[in-house]
Amino acid sequence: MRVAFIINDLSGGGAEKALKLLSGYLSRNGVETGVITLQSGNDGYQLDDGIDRVTLRSSRLSRGPGKILALPLQGAELARVIRLWNPDLCVSFLPRSNIAHVMTRIFGNRRPVVLTEQASSRHTYPRRSVSDWTLRNLIRYCYPKADAVFPSSEGVRDGLTRFGVREAIMHVVYNAISISDIQESTREISEIPHDEVPTAITVGRHVEQKDHETLLRAFAIVRKQMMAKLILVGQGPRRNELDVLCRNLCIEDCVLFAGWQQNPFAWMSRADLFVLSSRFEGFGNVLVEAMACGLPVISTDCPSGPREIVCDGRAGLLVPVGDANALASAMLSVFQNHALKKRLTEESRVRARAFDIGVIGPAYLELLRRILRSHGQSNL
Image (cartoon, rainbow, N blue to C red; front, side, top):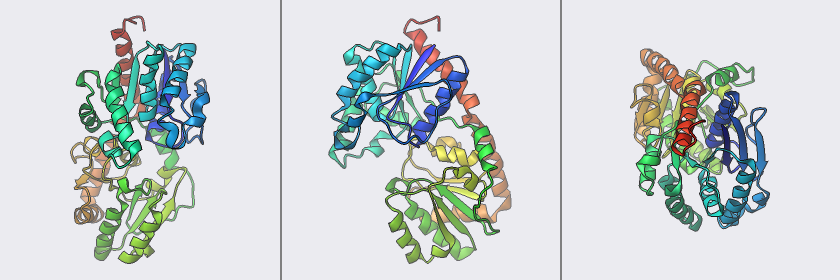
């Protein structure tokens, strides 16, 4: 079998990490694997040895406001690269790559077109701008024309049905993690500050979606009840606003902004609790990663992913979106109830194993084979 993956670039992110793990698994299991990127950039992930990669010559058009208008041209070039590479099947990630992939049909590509959707499209593109409106309509037009669509969660799948994608062509594929790689990373020696104060941690960009404001307000309530510390790993455009909020809440002395970290798992492993306060997600990779680090987790019950990951609350606690009081109560419960913390830690470790590449990989490979068989390639 010969498979080509298509993605915008290999900068850090959940989709890029999923592609790295899946392409590596396929390559190690006898599948000739290649990656096509729409644009160049600073790679956050390195592909495994033996995986070919090509970047489209039109990559310079994939920047700025013109990147949507450039999609037909990139679709044409992508079709040419696919024709030269001659894979049995192509799998794309992220909306722009998915749309360009579907457009290759116009330019003669007859191979099975498989799209991977990581985000809750109706939340990610809420019609606030012309580009959001355009992407929503391109998704509505292009995605239903694919041979198969792989949503990253049941919630993402439900959202895609509202965009006209048929249930029959959708197959939920949860994002994979490598538990062995994560556990190896937790053993890295570092200068991470550590003390005996109970510590909560979150990892994510400082953007509106992650709703760090609610987390900080919840932590201020916790601090009125007990000594504790909060670590925020990540960076983003709302950092200054969060600094101001910390000062207004009088918690600046017990909140650490750690910035972007090459190895967030080393930081996670030194905390007592992981918290995700998002307004929405597609899947929520970081929850699974925290569970693999052996942390009890608390998450907002946001669309979509967290409820599926923590099994309706059995492997972690769920709280309403934007409810600082409920979030604070959950954090206090874990900090102060040793039996609850122990149970959640054990449950989260077990649940994380379901997302290991050793479990997801074989199922993914069989799914690709089924799609090829449905297109008359029964020898693969």
